[in-house]
Length: 335
Image (cartoon, rainbow, N blue to C red; front, side, top):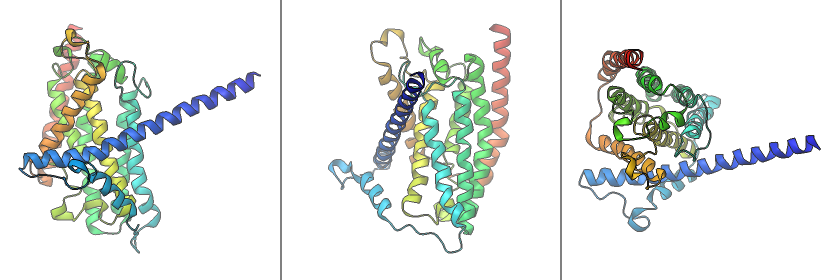
C-alpha cells in the first residue's frame, strides 16, 4: 500500500511539473510572438513609420504569419557542414533560455519554482547558450558564420563578468541568492528598491544585459552589413526560428530578472498603493524594461568591435569591482 501511494504521489508531482512546463512554454511563446509585433510597432512609431498593419486587425497576426512561414520553409543543411553539430546548436541555444524562466517569481505566491540558489541557476544556465552560438558558427562551415560565432563568444564572455559582479552587490544587501527573498527584501517605499543603493550596479547590469542579448547597439554577432546574418546565416526554417526564439525568450527572462533584482519586484512604489495587485506592478515594471529595449534599438547605432571590448574590459569591469567594494564596505561598517 505504501509503495502504491509513493508511486501515485510521484506521478502526481510529475504531472504538476509537466503542466507547469507547458504553461511556461505557452506564456513564453505568446510573449515572443507579440513582443516582435510591438517591437515593430513601437520602433515604427519612433521612426515615423506605420509598422505591421496588414495581416489581421491592426496587424496583430503579422508575427503569427511570420512564424507559420518559418515553420513551413524547407530545412536546408549545407553539404559541407558538420551535420550533427549543425542540428544540435539551435537546441543548445534555446533550451537554457527556456529553463531560466522557471526561477523568475511574479508575486509572493505566484512562481514556478523556488530555488535557494535561483540567481546562480540563472547565471549558470544562461552561459550555456554561448556554446550553442559558437557551435552554430563552427558547424556551418561558413566564414561569415564562424566570424559571428567568434564575436558572440568574445562578447558574451566579456560582458558576463561585469554582469555577474554587478548583481553581487544585490546579493550582499539581501543576503540571499533566492530571487523571491531578494524581491521581498525591497518591500516598502521606492527608495527601498535595490536600484537606489545599487544605482551603479543597475547601470552596469543594464549595459551588460543588452550586450548579452546581442541586441542593438551590441548586435555585432549578427551585423547584417558585415556578416550577412552572422552565426545563423546558413540556418533556415524551424532551426532559424529556434535562434530567434532563444533571443526573444532571453529578453523575457532579463526583463523579469531586472524587475526582481532592482525594481522591487511586485511591490508598489509606496505602501498606500498596495491595494493594486502585485502582478499589475510586476508586469508594469516588466513592460517598462521591455520598452527600454525597444527604445535603444530605435535610437542607437551599432558600435565597433574595438569599442565593444574596450567598454567591457576598461570601463564596466573596473566599475563593477568598485561597486562591489563600496557595497561590501558599507555592509561591514553600517549593517
